[in-house]
Length: 150
Image (tube, rainbow, N blue to C red):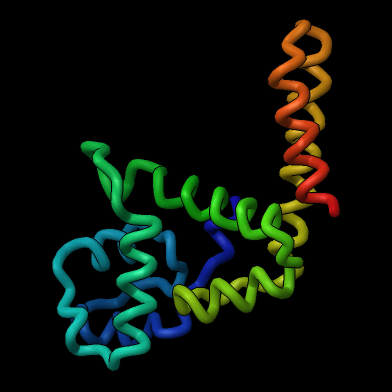
């Protein structure tokens, strides 16, 4: 999954502030729990604080009982990448956006691979939708494929 490839640039600084070892992967369970368990965001400079708060607001806010380990952050991250692509950003621009907005480093090639895999899944959904006579779903998936591939 694409969330497994995302890494925080400032993972070592978060680790020092938390007082225990943390992986640099942004969506690792320990990192997610640390970010949502009352870490002192004021200890960071303004730009980093804004990135972490944007990450928290965009990916960690959900009402699931098992939050943040419920899977919602990873799904929201994947959805964000697809939305950015459908809005016209290419894989390099998506990588740069994630770095600027959230402090997340992800290789453009990983983003491209995720987008290609997503198109294959959508094509399968479209084919099955056509076979099952679900024209509305087939049209929706075809629209998403068109927006991702442009």
